[in-house]
Length: 318
Image 1 (tube, one colour):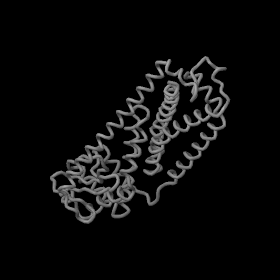
Image 2 (cartoon, one colour):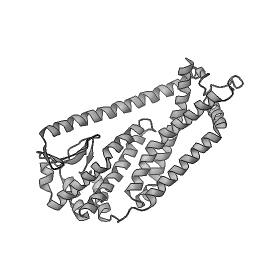
Image 3 (cartoon, helix red, strand yellow):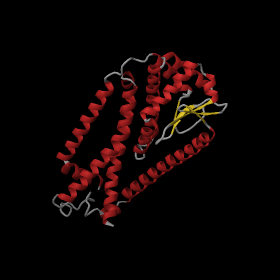
Image 4 (tube, one colour):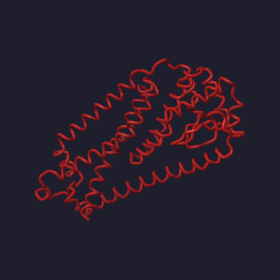
């Protein structure tokens, strides 16, 4: 029972850190949207990824520091018996706090629910892609599907492949078709689907609404980034014309990076690709440096002040 109680206590701390950091990260991404946009899609994508990945890492680091501190320092639990302890040896008192048990149970249910929904989405998408693969004709590196619906997307995490319909290929001029396929090949080279799945896994434990918000921001930045790659490989005007032509058709759905943009994203993507700069602003690199510096500072502070942090959390929560 002591071990289970300790798990509840440390679980509450983990959830507190992750939800607070996740909410803060989303707020920074939302408030700083214009500043990030001015620095280009790489900076926008990196900010969304950091807001997704940093919170669970921070939660693990805090819990690990507290657990290590409780296991390696002088036992103070008997001298401070007025609250439950974040301690590997005396954590049973957390089971006597109904709110803590309820919070831990609710967080577990939500996480399992998110994981189940993600798994169901991936399984369903994989089944649909297998159906397309069975009827597709491979032309170079593209799997062409005879269909009256316009679609072109990349599917597959381990072995990403491009799927395009005959309707989409026939609807585009030669330069537009080349631009569309260059966009999808850029997705394949960058392993975007793999990174997208990693982001979804990272946000299984996150603040409410954070997973969808960060995924949309990451997707939007990634699509504009691949538009830029395609523009460099072909022609910006051809990319823009292909986007408009694909938006006019009925796009097929899959859990993938789909070239056909939603109508609300079309204007922004066309404007962005026609105004593509030659080089990415330095803001993306600076963002990574700042994030790394802040992370190092937090780790140093956690190690240096683990004892007062430990006792403060016990007093606050226990």
